[in-house]
Image (tube, rainbow, N blue to C red; front, top):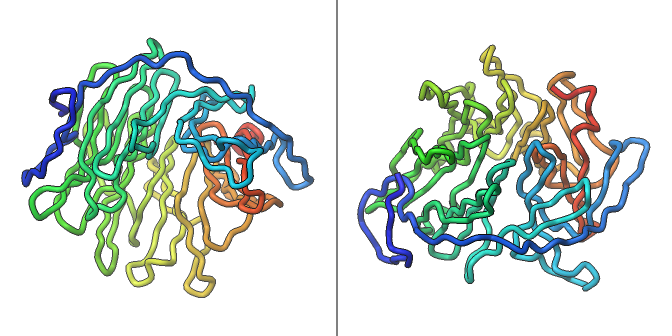
Length: 373
């Protein structure tokens, strides 16, 4: 549970076991006078391309989306200038109207790590070289406050809290240094009433809890190890009954994502951890299905899997065009266009084309209506 501290940050080395949000803060401000940016939206046509595909030249990166059709991301500072750089400011992006609204500018010395949103809330993790802060923006009254904070330490890797949000429930992971060890947790907060619950806690120098994913009453995440075999497994947490169980199959499993009755994750053998496949798990039947075809012979690796409305996509080291898997039809479809870093973000499928230099491709999931689950 987050306990109140004074409004200034206390930087000290404490050799103690840290519980939950280690450094809650009182800082609070009201966001107003949002900057509005008109986006450059260009239709992309092709025989083997989805309908309603557009490239938004101003958009540098998309980091999350919701089912209301909104996205969160970053813009290029000036697309008319060669070698332009990405702005640090976080924008709320509406692809339908081609407008972006400034919603958060990080503090001096900080950068946005990730953010999530729904119709009521925007939650943001920002970080510096020494600590992190989770900010909560109430979209109803436009009030912003810091939810909690903690220290960053090198032994934990770039493990700032990753966020996931569904309705009024927020889940995130933390990694905190404690004596000669590390404590990693999964925390759940009800944003409506402030109630907080710890789902799981592990302690040790070589194990951690990865990014959670939430849908309705379920949360999924993985426990991993920084060991020779990189042992890892995926867990499913039922919020209403507070029941936790392991759901991954025989191999190691990381980076799960959940939507409806399905969970997807990256799977690998402890003997060949660099060869990763995507696995689909049905919560109702407990059945696992491998949907990609990586092997030691083809040297492929699939990871960063994302899913929404029965559409699944991923990153791949040997894949130069966006590819989706349709759960309803059990088929894989690739698009005849170069692209990488494909992700399903709420109501949208997004990717970037490294050859164009700038811009982000965005297409509505409704373009795949016949196969939506």
